[in-house]
Image (cartoon, rainbow, N blue to C red):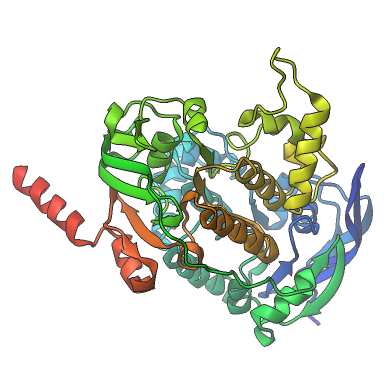
Length: 511
């Protein structure tokens, strides 16, 4: 018999406040795409890090190609033929794409050769990428492409993918799946973590389900439905979203002819962006990563104040030159797409991360009321079902999905009048995604104006009242969700709407 490509036997990993994995056993065949399914905090990422050598198990054994192995670090894992794409990217911001990829490859290769291979691999798999770009200029979606390209360049025998499509467009996901199916046909095995159940059913022929760090089931996902997989994962089906008819109120956010030159050579110029968001509506912005979303969000959040004063209005006041604190005083709260670094300080506790955008636990004399701060954080942890050791847990100790729930919960709990959120359900399980989307709709029903920037079309169609599309720094006309179609929005993602075509023709004529 052909030996298993990977065999985990009775893996256990304990941390001071939690048992991440308890007696976990799992087998993967050569050429098999095997899903690992579980809600946030179920122990999936810890298990993958054990296989990749980033974490050492307390108990249990790992066998690769029929031989017991002791993988002490990622370098030894890559030497065996194991590559991993992390949910939280392991990239150095100050280095270029090619330099980041070079770190994990044979050092006998020249950097120029690595850059050539990156470009060739990106072109081969439809993951457009300039190898000379510094990582700090990339959007989250583009960083994910770098991680995928880096893994593919090692020609892996086992490829571990932790939420690889969380910020990819549907078109990019389909291109990636063509690649992954080709890899399995060539004998490569894939361990696939995703909360997108339809992806698991399309790609994988085996599935191991984790709950609370333990294996609770094994199945063939192609013989299951989304509903049955949800029950295996969280013990129930997520409740359906309730859409209510709400009377639309006054304009909370108005963007008028927002034009901003890129801040670096790899950014995107914003060109004449016009948009309105009113109280009592959810407005969605769709688009392929790297088309100006980052620049627009920096301008709306107050991190970039270069725009002319009247280009951004909030509740009738010129806000383009206001810093984030001034905008919060008007009633705007904001959730960035980068969880660690912008949404939360990794080393600070959840309670102290509250202070980034909330000051209700600070006394008039300027002292932090620690008890009130911890109590408030505990309320958010409970309300949004955040799995953490408590308000004192460091932000970096949480799984990606649980940290996302806390950050979104922190801003929703502020009862904003204008709520701007990027990638609201990035990397969260189906139950948590349903909770976050329901909370967004509840905000809207209470009269809040909500702007959602997401690369998940299904999400935008589920919660938005109106949709815009951003492409090459320009914004499409708005379209009612009921009148929009996925093919139409897909075309607009390439800039193929009437206004954009006219602008390009005018620019060409002037040239």
